[in-house]
Length: 210
Image (cartoon, rainbow, N blue to C red; front, top):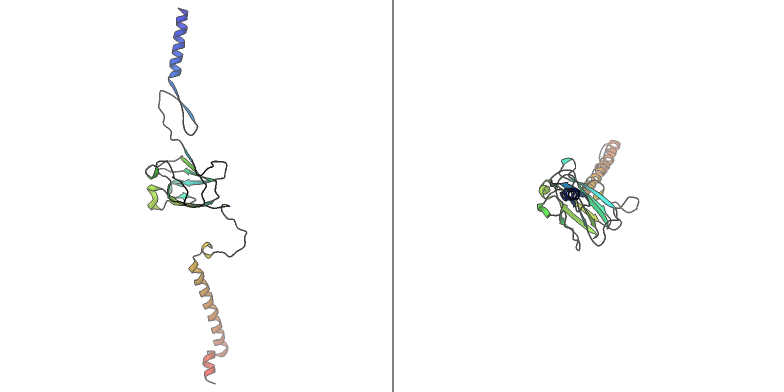
């Protein structure tokens, strides 16, 4: 009789233990549920090229503060750098629009038809040098686009010599010519005024009356 009671208790404990389900997600988290089903979207990590991890990481915010932008929209990195996209608003994705030959970046899983919400993270390690253009499919027409330039040495810092490119001086190239022309006209006007005040008339007109 006592043995029967012990066996019954053991069976009940086994049944209770069997009611618990342990699930390990792709992100490495372990969730234990008792009868209730919980669905959690796993974060996605993709690796480009042969190597993964170990290199520097650059973060891009997706929809910061609910705005329809990537922040920063343009970055320059060295090969082997991992770019981590972090969602701060809903209904966004990362869809490649152009990339160098030999690259195989596919963007967020599910392509242009699948979007992700706040808290989602997507990482990709860029190995092939060149420029990668991308956009958010639902908000492309609103200007939610970005670009990643992968070059040896990463972003160039100041300090070197060389002639500055007017396109990168913060003023359109044509505006520099307009400014120079304006300065030249001012100098000519000053010289003309000087001769007019000193001699009372244009030096050419004065010479013709002699």
